[in-house]
Length: 254
Image (cartoon, rainbow, N blue to C red; front, side):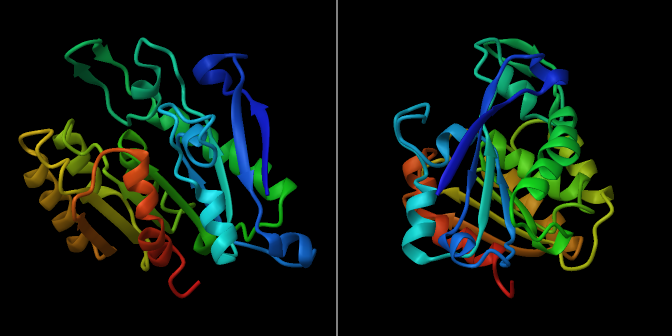
């Protein structure tokens, strides 16, 4: 079951509403005493329903979780659709120059502060969650994948595991590397990260930077599952096919 409602993020877009989504497993209805891990996700409009998805194709998360009986709550929020780089701004921890839009002010910290201080307490209050760090995960793709890496590094006291699919690690490389080197991390931090083999040509330094990020995570003692997806692309249909892989990592021993 997927529940939808509208939320606002005042520090980012004032009183402009956007959709929030929560998936509840069938087990939540069958056993009112049961409690479940929570996976927070970016680009919520692309997570569950094709009719909401930007390009008409979602990840189909609810269908997968229902068919497998996975005991997991998924909470997701729609991105900023402003044509002047709203999504890029909210999903970037760092300011940068975009060839088409000019300077993009990174507001990833404000986004994550809202997730941690407003959205997570809301989900823990209203739904049968296991609210502790060990059962709190985060995932996303592209800029949302970068944000997932940022979240598990900068907010490691909240999120123990992250899945970063096709993360945009090819810009602001110095700032990202500094974060990877210096962020305080608790033992047992888990990261799943992948790229599709067909995406590697999109940016000249993508393969090099991917290896750098992988190396940094391993140096920091992160338990890492890193993949190059054979014939994988930068799209929801490809990310949907990775659901069994990244959920297996996020839920391992949970």
